[in-house]
Structure formats: structure tokens, C-alpha cells
Amino acid sequence: MIPNTKQELAALIDHTLLSATATQADIERHCREAVEYGFHSVCVLGWWISLAADILHQTPVKVDAVAGFPFGADTTETKTADAREMIMAGADEIDMVADLAAIIEGDRARLFAELTAVGRICREMRPAVTLKVIIESAALTDEQKMFACQVAQDAKVDFLKTSTGLNPAGGAAVEDVRLMAQNAPKCRIKAAGGIRTTEEALEMIAAGASRIGASASIQIVEGLSPQGGE
Image (cartoon, rainbow, N blue to C red):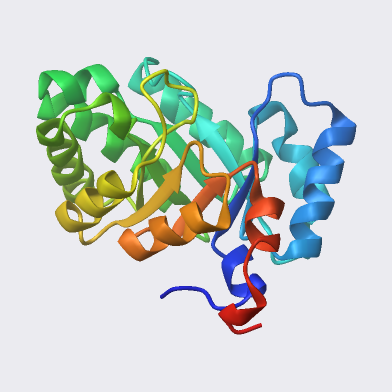
């Protein structure tokens, strides 16, 4: 559903701050912004998860952590341990970078084992933790994207996510969101990586994204025209 108001749009956004140079003051401000605007979550690096969880306790804003970030080259054991640690620190959602080499090589067994292992950690929690799997769609061929979609859907992950935003191949593209939505209809899609304007965010949503990851979240929300229904 296309959002018609700033509140509806904000509720679809993971307010993201993944800079290694972010300070405690930056994280505190980021969390205050998320509450003020009504973003779905804040997405921050592991060191800051417990702080964000403390600040956002008793607010509707979720805490989103990353695992295997940004390359996806960690072992399955490392990623599962990373996810568990982030959840214990207060994360409500995990954005995990997939084993990109396994996708490129078409190694279904290796990719499926990784996704199910991390998924098991997330699902055994009460309440269950949302798992989003990042595939760096800009770095893949259409065939590789479709392969990743099929394996992720079979592994019952919650979301497929386009990008980390740090891969030199690029970030989110409307055509990739559409392809992912078509090839993994049982998964939701998160578009992230280089989304900086309201128009770009709305195009991603129209193509099938139900979540947007962005550091330009405030700019995106404030850009929604009053004619949109607000």
C-alpha cells in the first residue's frame, strides 16, 4: 500500500546510522528522531544496540541490528553467534548479509544452511525476532538474484533486503525490488542503499518494498507532498 501521509511513510522506514565514527551523542539523537517521526526502527551497529534498546524502551520504535556486516563473508557459526548477541542486547530485528559467494556460485546447500541457522535463532525468541537477509542485488545477475530469492523463501526468512549501501556495485534499484518481490512472494522486501528522496522511496514501495532502509529518513518523510493526503 502506498503511504499517503508522513506518518504512514515513516512507519515503513528503518532509520539507519551505520557509520563507524558515530558517537554516543549521535546514537542518542538518532533514537530521539525515530521517536519524534515515528520510524519503524533504528538500525545501528552492534556496540550501540543496548543503548538504543534502553532509550527506546516503552516506545513503539524497534531496534534493528546487523550481522555479517558489511561483507557477508563470516562463517555461519559467527553469524549465528552475532545474531544471538545482538538479540540478547535488545535487538528486535536482524539484518544479516548473506554469503554472497554462495549466491554467485549457486551453492544452495551452503546458503540454505546459513539462512536456516540464523533463522532458527530468530524464531526461537519470544517474541520472534524478524530476520532480513541482504543479498547485494546490484552485484548479482538476474539469475543469481532469483536463486537467492528461491533459497531465502525456502528457508522461510522474513525479508529479503537489496543492499548494505556499502557495496561498490551500488544500492537499491526499482527493477531489483520488483524482481525480488515476484520471485519471493512469501518474503517481504526491504529496499536500502542510496535511497535519499521521497520519490525514490515511493517508487521502491510501488515496486513491492514494504520496508525502506535509509539514513536520509527525515528528508524522505519531510518531502512527502501535503497533496498526498496529509
